[in-house]
Length: 262
Ligand SMILES: Nc1ncnc2c1ncn2[C@@H]1O[C@H](COP(=O)(O)OP(=O)(O)OP(=O)(O)O)[C@@H](O)[C@H]1O
Ligand SMILES: [Mg+2]
Image 1 (cartoon, rainbow, N blue to C red):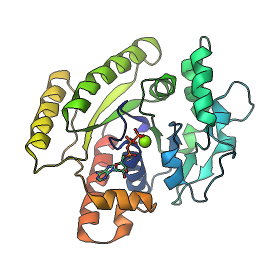
Image 2 (image 1 turned 90 degrees about the vertical axis):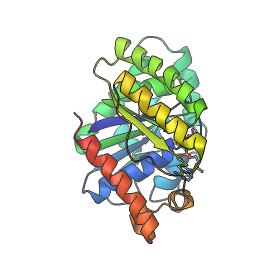
Image 3 (image 1 turned 30 degrees about the vertical axis):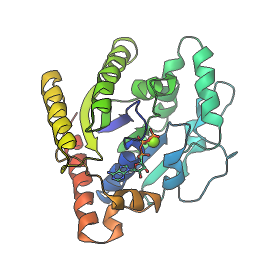
């Protein structure tokens, strides 16, 4: 499985939620997992760390900055479940790194890749939560990864956005990371009962077939319990109830599919 970047430049499609529940599925399967919060908003950090962090705590930004000496291993903190570590993002530090990267010269795309190289052997799976932008941080995420997982909503807006994202992935493959693979598209917030939901689900499947990438099936439905469990830092399997358990199974099955991918 290796290092997986979870991407979409569109905001609010469920990237962080997907990382959270895939990490849980991996822990339940006995894997050692590292999650990397590569989004300056730090949403994932706020639900994934065992202890709450302060805005001025040491974080991923310190490991990525060329101005500081910290290594990634120095900034990792325990996650909510045994077996998960978090490369956290707090305060405004990662936003400053994004600005630093814009001005920086050659090699800026490799910062995360180089930091991760020191620690990846400790983990079975590394999940990178990318920001909602096709910026230098996302390019760092894609350059550090073996595979990219696209999270999308079954709506027109996000389908168009995917073409844009694919062009960026193409660019990263050409210039920085030849072996980056597209692992597929996870459709999130799916509303099977709406005509629009069904229509765009079909469109995404057609696009996937045409371009040769997998659309994970079934899609993740829009369900309050997914948001509630995430906000409470709980796995769906820990939540109780048949609905939550069935949803946990979808993530577990996705993980199994990912394991079958080189
Ligand atoms: N399948 C789902 N059902 C219900 N709510 C969901 C689902 N997936 C995500 N959400 C909720 O939608 C909101 C956006 O999700 P999330 O933060 O994971 O998206 P994101 O793509 O990471 O956003 P951003 O681009 O801002 O980083 C959150 O409030 C989350 O709890
Ligand atoms: Mg997010």
